[in-house]
Image (cartoon, rainbow, N blue to C red; front, side, top):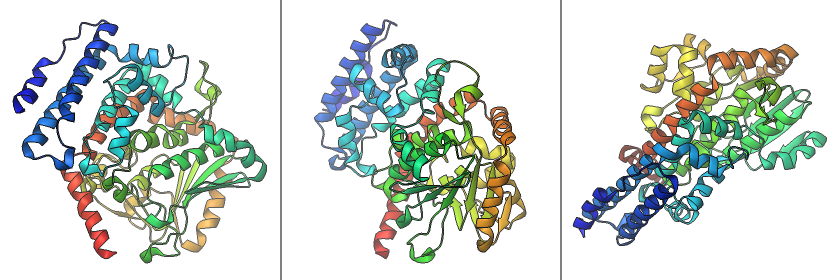
Length: 447
């Protein structure tokens, strides 16, 4: 059996640039790879030789897909979007590609099988989704269209908009959004896990951000963590503990919906604005953009700190702290590598990202990350002042120009193209799998 697996890579097709012929060749090769994989036990039951054989097949198919996309990315994207006349969000784009280009990306059935397993027991088919997403984003034509598509309002937000306009309040599963005066207050309610980010929170946050941007009565958005149930912080507000590492261990953190969805979705909408008119024209005529305030109680870790990098005003509680523990977790901290350097400079950014430095709100260098430090009792008043100050008409225009100068759309797109590949590879690396398993085992031991 091992000879069959070793010879498989040498049989990879040579593409000639004809889309239909290359598509058929890719489909045949990927199908042959699937036959070989089907002859093996699932990943947990493989011995060392079988695991190497499976990894060789997966790598060979992945190399074939990269070769195909290197020749045909824009043609594929145009077919999936009817010549870029339709806005197809990333999840639908990926699965439509699976249907129309067999073997290019995993099917829904293959991903459903993967999602039923813990991270360490998966074959890593999401890596192929990352290869596809990275290729699309790398293209100035297709990538720009996808970025703009992901800035459009979600269907859920459009369905809830009239209710929010009428009542000024919507409760989602893990986020509450309430209009008070001209501020939209988004409160994290993922209380059982220190407001850590998971697939559901990401989805709810994007809906809440859309509502804040679509409501004409709102001038400023506010992010704040709600009270949590954790014994150490019971009854206290916590901003965010970052990615839910237990969900990552259990295979419940997805590339498309979480790792890419948060960056292309609600975070980018807070920075760039909501695209409400797809027709060509000035960005200011096509988008709705508003300033954002973050109120940091207790701490902002990982993804929580990443949010601060797109805020226009950050107010921190006296004993709060910030950290991006990328080195400890082993994954890439979103767009933190791109954005943190602008605020802190290169050397402090390396200490924070590569060295795991924790910044307390009272430290002198915290001035680079937050604008105001207040006691817990003063937080509400400080947030109200920030909403008033940032709600004047000129702020929205000037912040748009600042953001354009600091992070042009193509810079964002090119970074995210590399992130799509690098992040998903890290999520399946041996060191990350070992770290999240150790954390999970410790949490189980504590009960």
